[in-house]
Image (cartoon, rainbow, N blue to C red):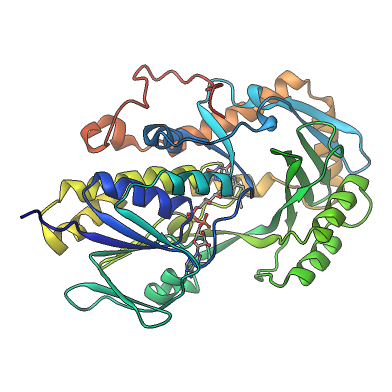
Length: 425
Ligand SMILES: Cc1cc2nc3c(=O)[nH]c(=O)nc-3n(C[C@H](O)[C@H](O)[C@H](O)COP(=O)(O)OP(=O)(O)OC[C@H]3O[C@@H](n4cnc5c(N)ncnc54)[C@H](O)[C@@H]3O)c2cc1C
């Protein structure tokens, strides 16, 4: 008689949760993903590079569409519209294997790639959970009870799983970096001169990325020492109008269109999540819930994916060892993933200190330097930053100590050479 597969309940059909379900299948598990909404198309623009890129390649995910941003230049302007610098993605990411995707499009493609052992349940609310019986139990709204051998909290930066099971650390685990950010989508044509356009103002950056079908992904980052979650669509636009002012015509035009289209912005303080451990009993946190890196790192989604693959590989290695094996696997997984996460979090802190200078004089000096530097020098500086981040993301043990613990090795070319992947963006 075939033994039943162990079962994982995953809270959150985001990048971490969906990738975990994919790899858990390879480890001989089945999974149920609970998502409290639908998965929406579009969303913020992500560059997937480093270990996350390798994981994505190994998954063979289909349907990730090309974004125009990849091909064009990134122009940075002052608030008066003067061009400060123009650098292409191909220069900053020269020699780096990467894909550019929108978060929602990646999540949809991951959901479509799931094997039969994974079930996604949308618009589901979790009422209660318990981790003290022979199995982990989760009670859904309406009274249905699910049992599992592992509960994965992949529910993002504001994780309810973390709030429930790491209650003692919740008040101290969010490390504010002194900024806030907002992202939203807008459909508008003919407004951007280049596929990526940014405006630098004192203490603020407004960036726009051209996606598919006239869709623009907007990102505002601003200095903000006040830590306060934001909510309510009308209020959100009121906040954004205050933050952005009304002086830059492109910014005003895009904001007005987004509001008219009813696009709901995500506005959040820029906060790292730092916890002493990422698992307790049969409960484990994955992705931003465990270790949000903030948008100052280009590795948050990538590391969520790589980490999910390693977690499944460690679970596979303890097949047949029951609950003790699961705990052993969680311990081993964390030992492998924590070093790169801590290096990347350190990098986010470093980026935060200089990202937007405080005050007008410092801003003017920064703008002047940006304008005077030759574009080669700007590209060299930016691409050095990208390479440094990818080096920090490297999960050393995967390559050096125990390569067999990855499922497939095809993604790595073995030579250490990284070539820009132009066919799949
Ligand atoms: C502006 C910006 C730019 C970024 N750029 C990059 C980049 O270039 N490269 C990169 O690698 N990363 C980047 N990141 C980081 C990346 O987006 C995150 O690290 C990644 O999305 C984290 O994935 P996740 O699955 O952990 O969380 P999320 O993507 O937040 O997914 C969490 C999921 O859980 C669901 N959920 C939440 N609560 C519940 C609940 N109670 N019940 C059920 N479901 C729930 C949510 O609806 C969501 O589907 C960027 C982030 C931002 C904000």
